[in-house]
Image: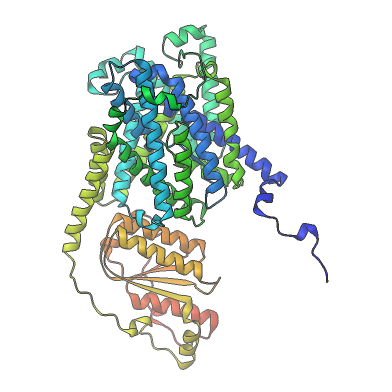
Length: 609
């Protein structure tokens, strides 16, 4: 018996992590994403610990950096795919900033140590509740159930977050809030020089990160910006003390460690009644974290073209948030840009997320002396960049992609979030979506036409030989006859059905998917998104997607939402179901048999893309 050589034996997944090539790639990816995570962590801390909480920014930075490391390590080891990167994100952080500001306002006359302990306890409790909530959802296999979120609600949530980040960035740079009462002060040179510098950095980030898709672009821009800042100080003969006095640098900070988790004895200093008043904010944090997780995982799934087990991700992020909360840390979940970055660096290994802790640990060791040299405009630029990017995506671009009613819902939610709060805005969006759905669905006949077995074959006459060929190879064509109003719930079911069929079908035993729209009365933007995902799946599995019988108004929506790609040879469109099915049959006959007759799809031109 011949035994395989050692080099031919399969390498266990754990051993693959320590292959020198993989280990080096993981290290580089961990350092890059860790550097980005540190900068974002500092900016998030500045967002939360602003205004009357600015004096405790060093503690906030320690909290954010610890959270970045803890969440990254736990999710990296527990995710359903290697190379998943997790961190505190903008949307949950915006909720924490609102909650912290409310606590500071309510405790304006309290001793400083009581205020700080209460804020930290509220943030930690939010992480613990979020972790338990997400873990239970994953444990009870509710991942698919919670993914049915109307698309306009997601858009409004993201747009509202974008404006909150812009307001937060302005306050970080100028230490005054962005509102009508402070407009005169903001346009004065004393403050405008600060936010204009940050705005310039944000515009540079927007332009260069969109144009150049390299992993080093963002960290490179941030390093150049820091070097440019200190170059200007050197050229203008401005010393560090003067720059800090003029508000260009963080600090000064009190001495002590950055990361100061609550001890058991600190519980006596916490005002638990004030935290109880923030029950709504903690519930909002839990819901927003879930919404952010679902949205992020959908984006990662499309970007890396791999199936993600949402239930396992919920459990992994749940444990990560619980660990973060135990260390008085913030809530977080998977990061779309960093995860894509790791996969582009071909470092999709679990150690990439573990190595992310190296830059985090370095900052915690260097302490306040490092932070006191950090320019405020750089942090403000990063917050402005994140906020403006969200507004471009969900306020500007969505105007051209969404129906007017859905776009109006997005704007209404964004305004409500900034006027009343996250929970109120999201609830308003859900209420609007239900009302619009009821109005649209009430216009549809309750009884649909019966579909006979003859619709499974085209009406084109075929020779006996061709009929036998189609009988043998008919499984290459997968027909989905859609009907009624396709909204966010039914759209997700359609997407899952197509995904399962593609995954369960052996290679090259499915070549055509026919979507028959002649019984479809209307679709919403969530359905357009689901059909765009089906298009990507078809391209991934090299299957031709055929749209048949699409009404003119629906076709316009599909084009705007990029569900129909005119430039793709894998997307075909026909005026009716019979023509589309006959074309598929012709392709099968040309490949596996002899076409003895000319079909109508050959005699009559196909509707152009």
